Length: 193
Image (tube, rainbow, N blue to C red):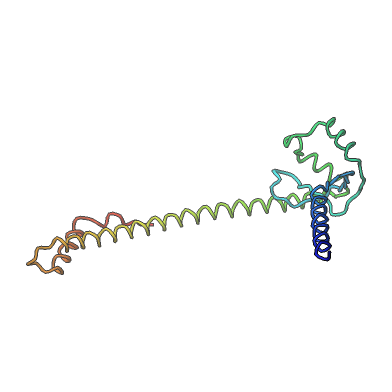
C-alpha cells in the first residue's frame, strides 16, 4: 500500500510539473499603450550637417503622454509617412527653429563655425590617412618585390650548384653564377620611392 501511495505521489508531482511547464509556454505578452515623449530642439554638434547650424534634441523632455495602442496604429495608417528627403531641414528652417527655441543669432553662428572647423579637420584626417595608406602600400609592394628578387636569385644559385659537373667546385659555380646574374641585370626589380 505504501509503494502504491509513493507511486501515485510521484505521478501527481510529474503531472503537476508538466502542467506548470505548459502554462509557462502559453503565456502571452500584450501591449496596451504607447508612451510618447516629446523633446524640444536645441543646438547640436554633428559635423555631418551639409551647411548651417546643426540641430539636435534637448536632454529634458517637454511633453509626455500615453495613447492606446489600437488608436495609435489607426492614426499611424492615416498619416503620410515622410521619406528621408522630406525629413531633411534646410539651413534656414533649422536657423528659424533654433531662434524660436530661444537661441541667439550669436550662439547659432558660433555652432555653425565649430561644425565647419570639425568638418575641415575630418577632411584633412581622411586626406592624411589616404596618403599614409598609399605610402604603406608602396613600401609593402617594394618589400615583396625585393624578397621575390632575392628568393629567385637564391633559387637560381641553388639550381646552378645542383647542375655543377662533378669536377667543378660548388663555390666557384655559385660565385660565377652570381656574377652572371648581376651582369645580366637581375636588379631590375629595385624601386626608388
